[in-house]
Length: 276
Image (cartoon, rainbow, N blue to C red; front, top):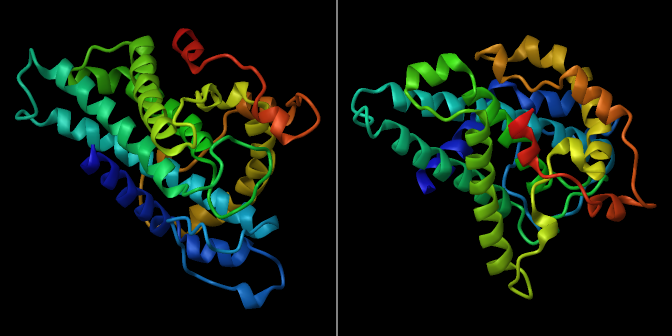
């Protein structure tokens, strides 16, 4: 699991480099503030540091999410590459070994987000603040990316695993839940699991949809430049939002009177995705 986690972190850093996020943050960051001009990208949240907000925070969050997406694309491809190796497992053991490896990969990815989040709140809010997105928001964006890609028949046939869409969703969700349960019990004051930490999926959490509204706008602004400076890689490594997602984000209906109420609104489970 540690190897899986550190592999994803490596791919995340590679994503920053591939997309020249130092240049992007310089060009699209706070206007007219040359004192803050920087080409450095820091990926471990420093909880003692000054809390950034406004456009600086927004640009930081967008580039972090873009690097997450790029990294996860590599992450899945690397899993498939292992499966294609004849020495990966015997044919009759391959499905079980694949399932175990995928489970550990999602657990590792989940723990990376919680570890780098430091002591900051875990529950998603609508506000864009700080340098990094909320860990649950990152998971709710990336876990569907994993099971959607693995649900492609070309990968399923080549790698020799037999999990259908529902099984992929259940396996990935169970792994994320296990990591969240562990982190909640071991790192919260009461050492109890907080059910609000359950993944809901971005379409079902109003606070996250509100959070994504400015994210989508500035990503559309950045994307042409990123395409121009991107070093290499498949177009599938570039973050995108479907028309359905854009429509849902744009038309989000808030619950209650503030981001805290939105963050705790009752919502369906991501398991619903298994039957979509």
